[in-house]
Length: 328
Ligand code: ADP
Image 1: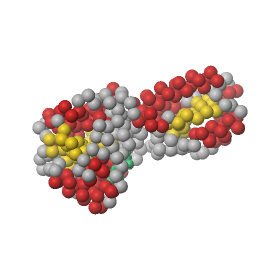
Image 2: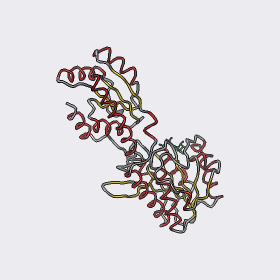
Image 3: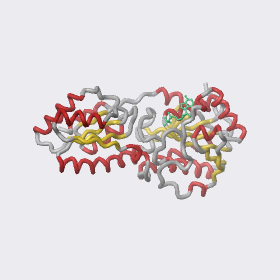
Image 4: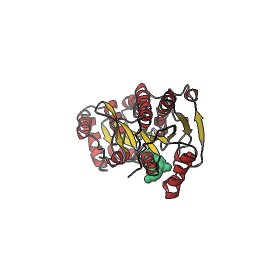
């Protein structure tokens, strides 16, 4: 069992880890300002757990986070750290926290980053996780910071591709992010009126079914065929070649890539980040540790890190069925 943080917190560290997402800065800002508001010291830990191991710290004041709420990326930068995954790495991370008087660490990131937080918690450091990922793939929360910006960025690009696809009567495959999770593809697919949506959780690699769908769609008067493909399935370019050969319909693939991770966060991302960031500090200041924050059934709430990591999330079946029904 993690050692619970029942001593009074005086100094909090904040880090961003794993893949970046728009709105992370708004979360860092909220953690920083709320900590200072409550009379606590706040340290920015740069470059995730790797920066922790290298003592890459900056002391934050209220002005350190000025003019950041509207900026994409993360001012603390982010990294993946193999060293921190080792037993020695985890112990060293906790030792460094103790050496600098850091009683608690707020970790903004995805599931992987939560595993790192759990490790720190086992070493006696209070931790609080904030869901920061464009993928929406954290089970304990209905919302993750960055998703709204990412889907809107992708959708803007997809709409443009859709226009030219219709003009040229093309088939277009647009590959969106999501290595293991298809939420970006599902939302963008429904919102762009795509004819096919390929999700890592659902796709059975039956390309003939897509080909038949394209042929049927042409017969009923569709001028284009838009396929949203998730990164986890990939191979959009070779898929386009095969589809063109089989259907005779000109087929183009566009891989949207990293543009989906950047850009100014939407109002929704800034709002969730601000509330979750502030709540993380309040929970720590009130003596809680080993928790992650989520948004569930209309409420902001907190969960045990172990509990959160054990939860599973599935693509909602009904929403996936709706996507199919609306593309007739
Ligand atoms: P995300 O947080 O976006 O899911 P990753 O899965 O890449 O991203 O995890 C980010 C970082 O969290 C890793 O590079 C590593 O430093 C840390 N981490 C992940 N899993 C563990 C683990 N089991 N123990 C300790 N640290 C971990």
